[in-house]
Image (tube, rainbow, N blue to C red; front, side, top):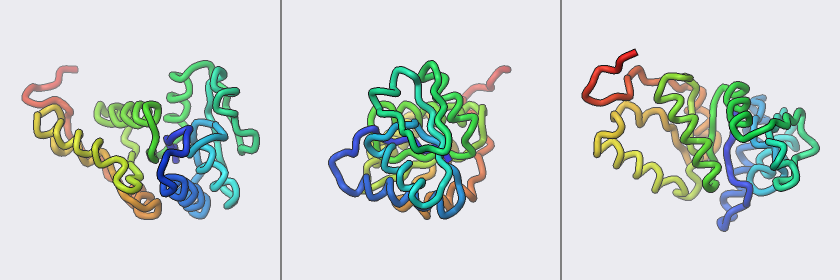
Length: 191
């Protein structure tokens, strides 16, 4: 399970509690955690929680972030790669599913890239938002707006699973069936 989340804790203590609960739930289900490899913010919390519960944790961090994000030294495995592109590609290859906890630009970018790859049919892995205290409500509203304005087909909204509790989201990810729909509206896609 690949988890994207903030390298800061955020203002609301509920974010940290959700990261702890997710790490614990992954370990209890014997689902390995793949994440950004840091030891700070929510990324550090989710990793520490999974490790404390006996889980397997694989970090992937670019060399230039090793010092800035304080690479986690206690992981099952830490991959140090050359770039952010290599980081995302390796995380995507290693993961069977993706979850985004609250975070900033990096979290949004990583989640939306994986979501775009699913939309394009590059993978059929599930992806979901752990929507802690409505953090992702504005993003979900934007996706609805993109559908209303015909930038997204309604069936593509099913690519984004969401729940407020880790266990519920993990159940949704486990039962995920990808939609069978082309992304293009009003034209036949050409190979």
